[in-house]
Image (cartoon, rainbow, N blue to C red):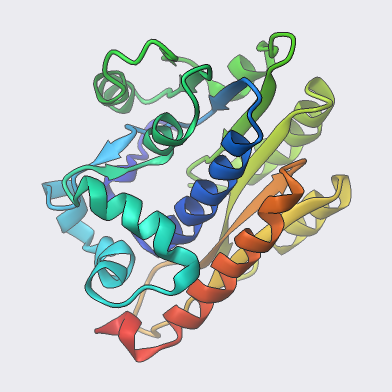
Length: 265
């Protein structure tokens, strides 16, 4: 489907967990000092204006990054929150922008985005960064055609829209193929947590494939909120061992934050 545009949801609570953990993971990967081939299968537009029309329409950032910005963020989230605040809320960094900022000059980055408008915005957002290629193509099939060069660390981030159950089915089929395609590659998946628990079986399946870091958190559900979501998680295969504790600390901190009065003021 080509209807999903993340600008309506940028900076929301699901993004907080996703981007804070990704920020920590990319920092640890960069610290390893190896050349990196970083790939995104569903890149979006890369940067978002949280004061713009799309973001204001649903106001989802109000209970996400903007609540953290107004309050006192937990210690585990401060590195990511400081990074966002350094850019300003008119230039909120999606995952491609985080990769550009955190990965070294030697890194190669390939961003796939199938939505025409999102692809055009992404191509503009990455600027003249010689490390980056932006491809208007299906990310699942395109990514599997790629191989790291000798000495490169393969890293792939997967963040589909999950608009329908078919998205979970597609990722369930794709993930073992990717793990086999890149035997030493790092695979990072974002997973929404739904009120009806539809992702539970899929999460158990992912955990059975290989040892992985699972960092997730849920927020209190407002009975008047019609959203199907109640949380967010990141699953990372073969990530640096040093990233496990920071990832879990971020998830625990944001779970506690969401349960506190400060998160809702």
